[in-house]
Length: 427
Image (cartoon, rainbow, N blue to C red; front, side):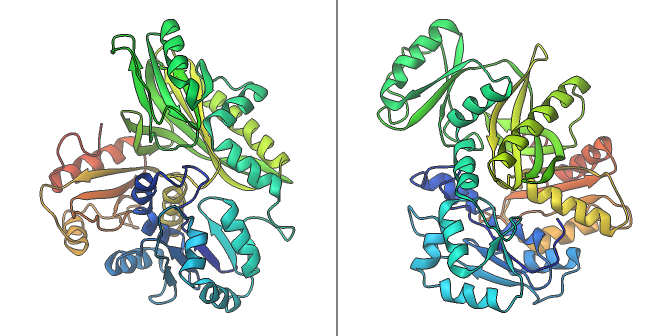
């Protein structure tokens, strides 16, 4: 991601766009990933985050990115239950400080993870333009469309308009959920129950005819739910794109998601081992969705998730109209590779668990001693993409290489070096 004017990188993982605010545990888990937004920084930028990056991690990222020490300002926002990050800024009395930081940076723009209403309102109060929007700013239509397309029901409705294939399913209110599940199990052997506003596989419930008769599911009384046929899935895939009014929608990257019980655990890019016609169909759907978004004023990144069934049929499962879990690592990989003079790198992000707790500096030293750390000269290696984990054991990492085979070899060597159990990292 290139930018000339300074950015205020807004790591608003506490947002009501993708997940309802009462889902505090989910939001707190996501917020642990906020420090990795350091991979977007350039000199003069400001990172606003609910979880600050550790000093060793920040120094390492700045070294790899060639960003001078001390040239980036970090503002930590104490998060309060049930609040968006924008609201927490106001409650913590940080609005004036952010305004001063913005005033010191001519032409500064706000780069949010999620285009939620509270963020757009705060940007307006601060006199900040939201990236990548132009002087006209963010329209109400763009925000409304982002909210709608970050729900399962909203996506299914738009998919129907655009000719995008989705799994057979029904949308229902909470009061009718149990009856809907029973009716769907009358037609299909297995179903999956999804909260309308959720992401990353959070809140999914899998049921089959072999289970006891389902009683109340979820809260059973409120909200909107989607009940879908549970497909026999061979691959979980996605395409990430960027769009905007007056600009062509383009594919940024595609890949395969690593999942466990329907939840996201990692990603491998670019997408490979899938029929070319399937890749074309996925990209065509993503492009059609981009045109829909742009026509309603939305500008910026978004993703389309899908599954390839065992019979080879592609089904779209959801859209994520925001910066997704793969947007930042892709930007990091592209930036590191280009600076080293390489193009078209394969990469993955995943996590592994060490037998004992260890610190960031010690782990980085071992990677360097083993010859596994990112090497600009070779254009390959491991990057400790996330900060040191709170438990000292659950390490997030990225692997970059010239192709999928080499990336897999490096990941295997990493797992051996850090003694990850077989279930970590690789599937």
